Length: 348
Ligand SMILES: *Cc1c(COP(=O)(O)O)cnc(C)c1O
Image (cartoon, rainbow, N blue to C red; front, top):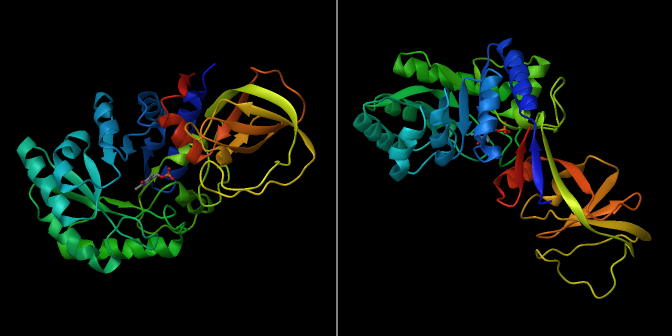
């Protein structure tokens, strides 16, 4: 069989419902982030079935498809000024950091007779997208005066580039900026969006989240994990996605390679420990389909590594060639198996 990923839509809608309930107890609304599913319609619908009212994605093409669904749409990755037309068509709200782009979004919104909602992203230390805190009030004030633009609020995104942890201090900082913006523009901000699945630890602990009233959740809905330590969120399903391949070779071989050591297929020098003889299996999944180092086997096997088209396993006992081996993908593997055209998507 070709490599495949089994997607349990009920697990996804149950996770979405649980997280909505958990967050709404703390007066936080959530948007469901579909980007790791390559904009799957089924996954978006499962989140909506779980009660999610707003779907967020990083790609315009995915959000365009979601126009068929009865849901609000949010664009996570800022666009170039030149992409403002498609962006306005694809979503109601976009996250932004550049005034030139916001002006262009305003012009395109006016042309279409709509209002485009904007959340200004503030960089609170993770050093991916965002204006610096000292520049936030000025850009918000300017954005709010642009025709066609509705300044919905401000937001931040942590734990992505630099792994900076969301904390009550960071949330207080964002809330303080929100208050300064409100003072300046003389209107309350509807949304203070505090982050992503990395914020769930704070929600679970009941930490003070100040003015934060929105989170954008992807991995926690899809994989059931908070993302600071990647621990399962109590009550969530962690097996909504299972990626499988089949054994194309099973042989007893020495674990120790034989010969002079140079670089592997990807330019790395690998060191392989001598563990004596091993029952080795090869499954027909490779780096084109998953990240072999980011797979948790469902059965009693160990992942040794992989190349473009092979994942190598150490097997406890000999299995028949052709047998299937299932894995729970981490976020990196999920992203790859959902975007790989070679991996069949099987919805259940
Ligand atoms: C991907 C992304 C999210 C969702 O992150 P998860 O860790 O999957 O919850 C939220 N906000 C932005 C801006 C993103 O790019």
